[in-house]
Image (cartoon, rainbow, N blue to C red; front, side):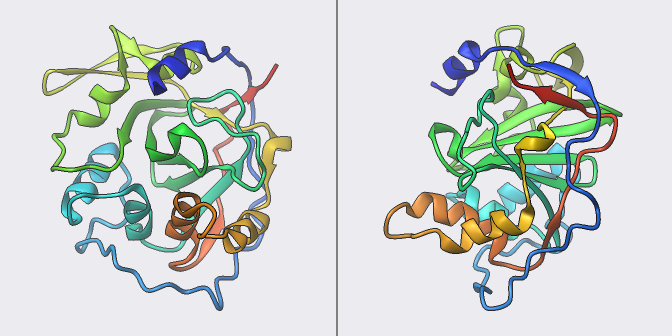
Length: 242
């Protein structure tokens, strides 16, 4: 179903620029909302900076592994950007249920707190300015993943489903027997970016009796230590919606 959604998505126009808030934006205040961590990473695995590091983290957690568990296991502080994203496989137009981008070294992890895609972790690893290697993991994960699994899940024939929206897709070699691809990285338009403090407030206001899955994703990011405003670099293209 997610692959079909991607096929039907319109291709967005892009321009060069930066889509994130100013670096001076304060971090969220987690005082009073510290939830005990139950998903703890082994030493050295809590801050993955490449796709293979995410695979290693997932495989190190108790099976079955949920997406909120992986988010909880990430070391703090987390650099996060929230935005509405109407034309994406992780689509949302709701400011209180945004798409969330987590920045870690060369890696951008993205999740959405509502809709069909909220069990999907999208991964983009920068290989050069403005260009990322694409992969994705669908949760829950029931058994250890091979290194090729995130690339295989993103495949759509002899390309990836990501290439339907991200331009200039190119073959990037194989991991095991699975082909991998790079394409343009895309950042949200500035007017779709939600201040990180407001996103954190939406997380605090989430009612687990009404939507426990949404609240679990929010809690995985915001309830286990400091979160700061993240940003895409200046050479990432802005995805301009029609």
